[in-house]
Image (cartoon, rainbow over all chains, first blue to last red; front, side, top):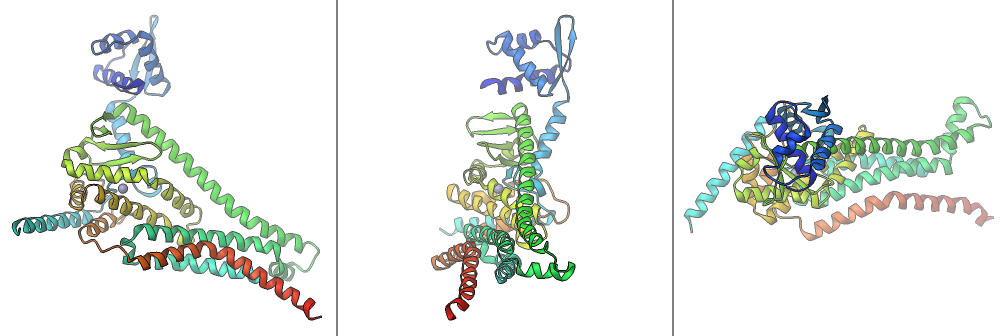
Length: 127
Length: 306
Ligand SMILES: [Zn+2]
């Protein structure tokens, strides 16, 4: 684990898995099974996630209970939408290995690969 | 005034001819040279247009005559001419700046949001030095301005180790070559002046050429067959574009080029290409100086003859 970024991921993982609001203390107790952490560290992480809009919180007695704003699937869908969009105005936002393809193109690329494999086999048979 | 007309004419010529001249099959043999020529052509047109408008200020003859013919010769025509001559380049550069700022702001916001999503959903793979996000789709990309290369678990699952090296080499070539800056600049010109062919076509041309540059580097780092294998491994997991997308056909061009590599252009061709690029950039300025000198010479003639 490296820094607060990874801790944020670990906290979100737990809150998504629990499917119910949790306090700083509850998150801390669970995280402490893997590593040594201070109460204030976990409080900072939850506070950051709340500020960034990942968590909502409600006062329950004297402590806040934190809950994810959206499910992991919804965030994943948003991430993948951005990740797979290599068209138009997004050409330079992220640079891809393989951009969008048409179905014709998919066929052409597969044919090309098969011809390459045939060529490689012929070459290996004729030493 | 001759100067302004000559510069406008030159700009129009380069703006329409360059896209055709740069579409030949030889572009695949030397993507770096083709990229240089594209950007030199675009720069040449841009500089010519600014210079042409600026020369209206220094020699307002024709515009002045036009205005005089339209509204009658009043004392204000001279002022009006200078105003137009001053305004045109200012508007041109203002449009460019506005589009540039809007684009940069949008990209920065998009990347920041993407990095935020990655920070929670991505898992750092320290062996590969990449971020892995879990998805059945196949995607590999880099986030420009950072050193982050991202792979989906679906992509990781589809690639053999050697193919994975090739795909990562391609992505790292994008980052090392700072390809996003070239694409972003092309996007500014294309969005600011979509009516000018050389600007409009600069964006798809640049986007395609950076892929060829990254492929060439990946081939040197890992191997031709590995790179083709990696591209082919993605065919059942990439986003399918509906109909003919702007980028349509590009991946098959890459694969064909990798399977049947034409030899790079000979040195003489590359040198003359570089010469053309240098001329394109220098010509508008030279043209301006030359014509100004001729005009000054002509103006001095009567004095000399007297
Ligand atoms: Zn690429």
